[in-house]
Length: 371
Image 1 (cartoon, rainbow, N blue to C red):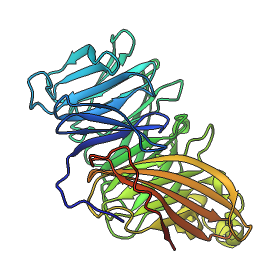
Image 2 (cartoon, helix red, strand yellow):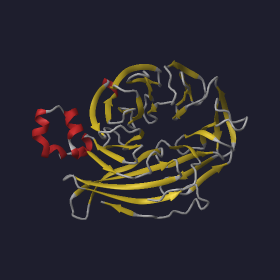
Image 3 (spheres, rainbow, N blue to C red):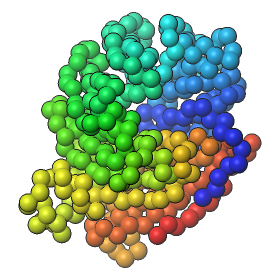
Image 4 (spheres, rainbow, N blue to C red):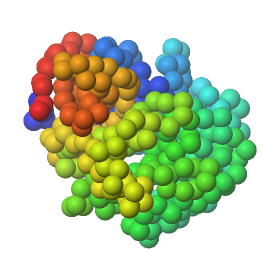
């Protein structure tokens, strides 16, 4: 695995709503790349940016500056058009903007003590939600759901989340997920499931939103670690896979019900005497890990590009999972993970390139097989 000796220039990074593009904000401005081939699609040296969020593959961006330039205040949200290179609308706030999420209907702006929900087209405020101190701007948003679900931390002392339906908008439930405060949250693409991890980072849990109940519980590890990113596989119903990266530099792959299809047949005795949510955490067939995927303590951003059934070299049915990882040291990596029903796994580093290099459109094509 390659690494960069230069100081990190990446301030923020994110994937668009269908993971076809990823954007990075740097001290100089922003860059947008095609996730599938690494091509540089757009670049603009606007100055330092804390936040860059895309609206699918449209020309609209939501950007927030670092404040190094007067026009790019961390308290100003700019809805920017990449075609005209002009601001479509600016929204100003009394305190710094910590996170922004959007879809075709809604725009969500997260501050430390409140969150605003806007109609995207008219930029009319639909709801102002007062919150406890949310110093990291933690939130989860389901851009592909009709209800436009939004999750925010409910407490600074325990791991509870408040889930809102921003299409109305209204509060629909509170999910008590962990004893320690939340560190990461993500919705499945349709908003039916919410995955959470606490600051302790030893357990990852999946909740059915409409019932505010826990459906899966997975043990990431024994020792505490910061979960940097969580991502579900794309799915209309229950996702196949949930992935996570942590400060240890490892990639964790958790299998959900839709992917197992009999994985637990070898553990029927265990399943018959122990509740399913506990069995999920204990059953090694549900959890696979690749160590040293990224350098330790380097923040990373995840996306699951696809999950599909295939056959490996031994002709056994296998689940092929393609995962994208962007790291703050300036690297993009694509991993292909194959897992058979007999719980055998293979890992392949399909692509790796440094998007901060001057030759941005040229991939390094560095392939590596990990046993």
